[in-house]
Structures are given as C-alpha cells and as structure tokens.
Image (tube, rainbow, N blue to C red; front, side, top):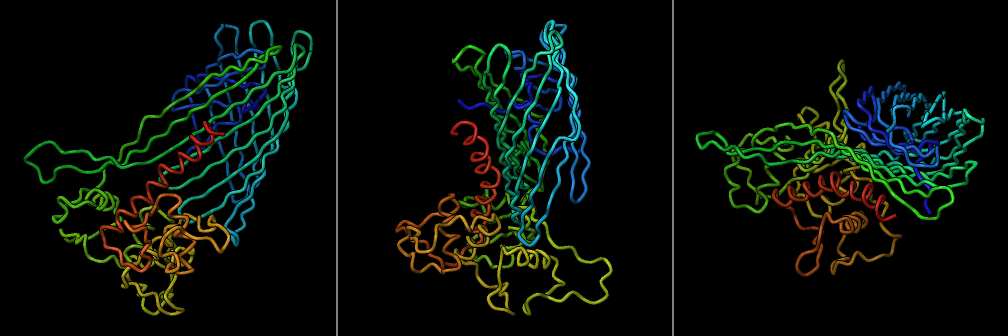
Length: 473
C-alpha cells in the first residue's frame, strides 16, 4: 500500500480558523502534512496517536528569499475535536538554489533549519524530539512555463509525555509541478510508515494545489448601450487531497478527503468592437485575444481571412503567455541595434521579437534576415508554440513517422514540433490527414491556434499534474 504525505509525524487534517500568508508560493501545498487551505481555513489530519484526528486553527507563513537561498517558516496553532486536543508547531526550512543559466534549469536542496511541535490528544501529549528532512528539486525553466520535480525523505520522532515511549515516522515522497501565467499546480505525494508501541501502520497522503485563469464572456444586458458584452479574466485557486491509511493491527485501508477553494478574482477586460466577425467561426477566439491585448488593432475590421504574418504572431504569442521580454536600458547612449537587418528596433513591439529569438522560440530565415512580413506557415506556427512550451525534445528518437500522409514534406526543423503538437492536441490534419506544413495561416486560424495554446497552459497541464497524479497513479 502507498504510504503517504502524512510525513510530519502528524498527518493532520485541520480546519484553520484563519490563514495568513506572507510571500507564499502562488500554488503549493503548505509544509509536508497533506493539509489544504484557503483564505480562512486550513485542513489537516493527525495520525500520531494511531487514529485519524481532525484539528483546526491558525497558520501563518513567512518567507525570505535571496538569489541563492529561500527560508520558509510555518507556525501552526490548532485545536482538535475535544477541548484538550491542541497542536502547536513551528518549523523553518532552508532551500539553497543553484541557477544554471546556460542550461535553463535550477536545482535546489531543502533541509530543516529549526523545529518545535507539541500535540495533545486526550490525556496524552506528543512532543517532537527529532526532525530530519532532505529534499531535492530540479526546475526546467522554459519560455512559456516552468516545470519541476522533487523527491524528499526524512524521519520525525515524537516522545510521549506519559511514559517517554517513542513514535517514529519514516517518510519518503515526491512533488511535481508547473508554473506559468495561466496556471500553476503542485501535487505532493508522501508515504509514511508510523512505528508505535501498539504496532506499525501506514499513511499515504496526496494533496494538490492549483491556480488557473480563464476567460468568461459577460453579456451586457441593456439594449441602449455602445457594446453588447465583454470578457472577464477569472482567477481560481483550489486544493484537494486524500489520506489513505491503515490502523495498528489492521490491514483494512480507509480514506478521508480534504478540499478548500478560494474566492475567485475577477478582472474585466477591454471590449472588442470588430465589425467583420459576426457569424465567423473564429469570432470568439479573436475577441478573446483582443480583450487580452494580444491584438491592438485600431481598425474596426480584423480581416480574419487575410494571411497572418510572422511578426504579429510571434508578438501575440509572447503577450498571450506573458513571456518575459528583454528590457530597454534606461540610459542607453547609442541606439539599439537590430538583431536582423530587416527589423527596426524603434518599433514598439521589437523587444518581443528579440526576446523570442533570444529564448529560442523563433529563428530568422537567415543569419541577417528575419522576414517579419512573410506569411506564417503551419510548420512555423507549430514550431514557435512548441518551443515556447519547451516540449520539442519530447518527440521520439529520429526516424519516427508523424502519422501524416505528407510526413516527408514536413521540414526537418519542424518535425519534432509537429509530432508533439499533434500528440498534445494543438493541431490536427485536414480531412485527408495532411499536415500541410507550408500552407499560410489566416489571421483567424492563427487566433484559434493561439487560444488552443492558452488552453493547454490553463487546462491540459492541470489535468496532467493534478488529476492524473492523484487519481491514476
């Protein structure tokens, strides 16, 4: 049986009456106890007594961070179901980070800096006597999203007040996560073996914290108005978790679930007012991108059937995914020199292009030419999106077939991207199963593809890192 996230000798399910956070991660489980929380409540179960005991209370989190080190401190003041049931815990973790810029990755090591914990259940008090932890994490920093994975192992030893007997918890586990502008999820799974005088039992706890943003159309009901509706960007955050456990002397596995949600954050966006989109199949996609500021056309006509050029598509992808761009030096004595001879560094969106090239998202047609006004082909569009996601290396070893009847027509530089984009549902073939790599994309087609790219960042990654990890492992 999986033993789990109940790592802290107290696999606690506690409802915290209030939760205060200072500098906490945007979406990550608190500590290593399997608890869940929102603005008001924190939930956790404690198994140190040999039975699952629910606690409630207050949790505060503080964080200090430098370029190479982060210190996180958690303080819990919790109460249980009975008047005498109390838990106080204070623990600080130190994480040393090693940024490997040339490889686009960051490795980190986490250990315990200080700890104290006392749990009273009924007439017995358990005091934390020793706490050892080691966690290693690697983060792959890609342009549109960071992906990370970690492993942890440790031991917690509690001493009973009544007879000085020991309860020892041996634990090991893993955490996986991603972070981008449209979504952040971390899932943590820990297996714990709890050794007591009454016997040994196991707890497996799984918990996942997810934060996502999505667009929602809001109609404007009055007839006498300058617009009929617009989009709101909704930010939601929720946590779900489960403890699976056996009790001393029993082989029957039982489970308890936990969950919390935060109040959504609502941001209203600018209202699209294009006059040539009524009845068009891509109307919703185009208006969503305009509301996000991806398209800043001043004209009332979008011209969805005209070709999409390389320059605006790349700029749009950078804006839509909120990819960090290079900054213009505040006191630059000489004019900035363009990285390609056919680009103008004075153009307002020029730095998006230079940043895309620097991050490996886009490339020029030659060493000196970028061809910004050339028509965007399907092969180029797919390669740009997959490079932004950092997934081009997930293609099979060379020699594979993409499955399209025109596989041999796909340029070598775009084949990996075409394969991966198809696998993750970004693109499909036509009715004859052709990829059509050199076919120019219309502005409508490019808009629809960009929205699917955003849905991947928002929904598909969450499905993979949360639901697949919790329910299909």
